[in-house]
Image (cartoon, rainbow, N blue to C red; front, side):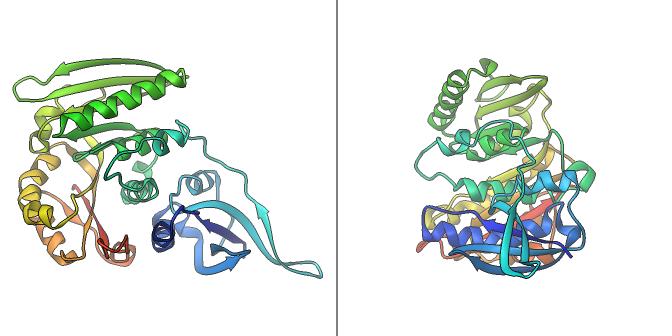
Length: 335
């Protein structure tokens, strides 16, 4: 039985290291590698945290590519307890099998107040797409962040080679995201075409960007407007107005939680209207004071969504910091 050593992604602080450790196994359990995993054993090698994956067979090409798209683990080695008469452990590096559409700097360089950690964003995006049927979880997808803030979800989506659409009510956040993307594309000499336009019929403005790299083309749409009007705001955008994945990190803090139910009650039907069969919704929230059962009830009452429960889906809660002692994720599918 082959054993793969997956290194927990190193982080710049203890709180982010705990985040990576908490989400590494659930992410692997939903990944394309999952059918091969017999057991997962945490261990420490040379002072670094790893997960040892006992596999029933070696991964195929698609499963190897998926490994290098994981967020909570970052390096992979074949693990040997011994080689011949020599006692180990020994590690044989695995060669990267995924070429990102954009370099990691696209996600890492963007800094702003309240930014969601890029590792966590990568994990939630992976959990969302791997919750689609296997045949619909790869290839070119369209990702919508209906509460985009400074655009971290969009940049992670672009790095993985997906279209990215964001809706944000604060115009300054949308404009600064557009400026950052433009400067990045110009600095990297990436061919692109941009234009801005007003949204017909409502108060809203859109920034459209088409990016060309070789034979591949991606669309980025940044929308300043009310997420409750998503169907109108996304009408007639390049690539179409429906999303394959809808991913959002809900507002944190006591002042936001008072209005969170109203936000979801008004927004979930609009998000369902820009979904298609098998579209997956992934929401994270501060669960310190808001139980998972309450969030599930709100989602089920607020639109045509089927919440996924059981197994990995019930193990996604994790600590963040001294203020957000517990953050959770809920994933739902549009029928």
